[in-house]
Length: 294
Image (cartoon, rainbow, N blue to C red; front, side):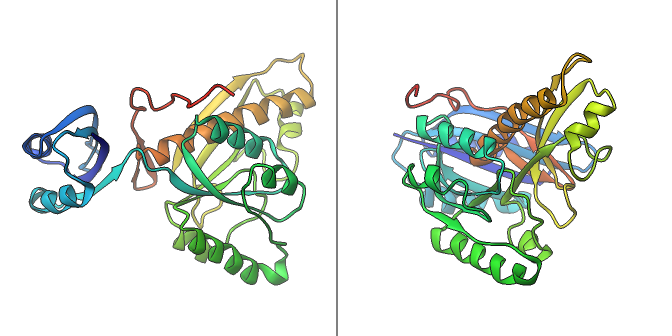
């Protein structure tokens, strides 16, 4: 028995949910989880359905049969097998907290992805990556070779079939061309002090201003620097008694957690682009279960 999911986006109108549920029932599919959102501001409708194919239908049969349902509503529809792990490339520079966190979650099965490569502009994490039997690529990035370096990165994306690129504190600005080519397929993480504390040492700037909340934001990458649609955010409280170093350490923790949650939402098809915003549905029951504890 196969566990599949269906993502749907279209203009809001009567009969969408009935049409989808009737189709799945007619195909001997049993719905196990469902979430929907009707955006009254934009007039868009979003839905994600998890279901079991109890009659043995495969994805291609379901896709073909669903075309007659999707067409009258102008649906953008996507079926996928929840058991198939998405291929992911991680890009990192010299801050390794997010990379190490993702490698651990991947190793225990808490983040069901297939890490097909790690790309860095430095050599610091070659050994830890290779020790996980993951290909490591060091691609130096300088102003004079930026186009060539990004061409190398894109070749790795194409050769590996990666569906998602994760910037795990990759401290380089991607070109507009790469952002457009990979639209909706690159996730970034950074502190949530923007636009107040820009540039170097944002945690030090926050410390000197007596900030009481430290946060992190994970978003899709667009040509507008750090302004892509937000997927996940979180905060942690700090007090007057904590040091600049405490701010940095707490910030790293929340960055790692927020990035992992954003990736989890993306790979399970829970994130929908909605203009400059996103619709992010709650996780399905059991989707956070790990294959092993450590």
